[in-house]
Length: 303
Image (cartoon, rainbow, N blue to C red; front, side, top):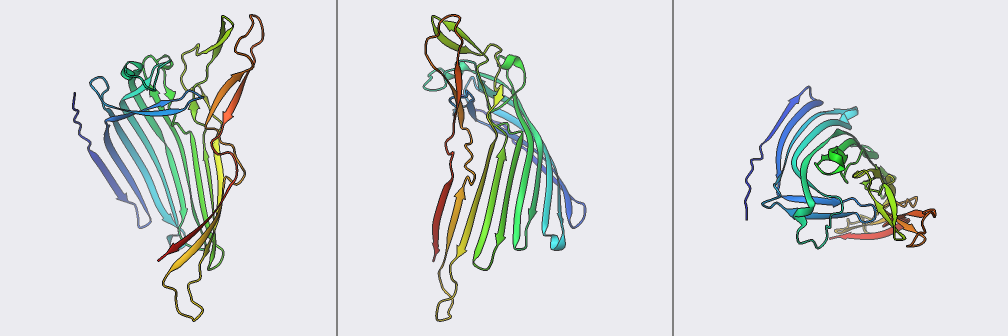
């Protein structure tokens, strides 16, 4: 059994440009003693956690952030910020091609260690007062790994690499009792690994990765629209006295336009055995966990 000790210093600096804007910069040193292993095989996305051991060192990372923040508009009703960040990591692990991740007593033998990097820009805009309020956040980012023995030693995106991430939330007070909210989410498709070649051995179709590539394609983009309406209960009794308790109803629709966002993609073929010289027909099938409209009604009571 081995123990690890690491310092994790942090530094943050803020400079006020005026009463409405400022600049912030920070540095963070991080150590993580539990490692995330993400299986990105298209048909079986899976996450596993494994602790640091004699052979698996803790993951170490340095993160640098620089941001600009500003309030503007009448009574500073708007808030805007933009931040750039860069994070470099060491001892980040990933599995070898053909690894067995489940019920593997010798899992460490299927893992390799390398370096990682994550960088991007984050934009944020919020309207804080008025009948109509809301916020929008957009991130342009990359998250990549470089591990000797995987992807021919070249950089490749991790499962959590999201090139584009957009979230919009808006709220509108229709009157004293009714209000509405709309939420939209868009995220770039998850990187995943598809087989690049196929061969026939004894009449069986065997897929394989001819170029040792990792996360070589992306699933379709994820996007969803949710809406809800809130009805506040009456605050005054019939006798004119205020109510001690409060209640409200929420009527919502999840996934308003029924988007079938993919969770994974798997491949099928018409027959297990293929005659030599015959064309190989395979079909990609998409698995969606929630691919339909889901209405909801809830009642909330406070006392």
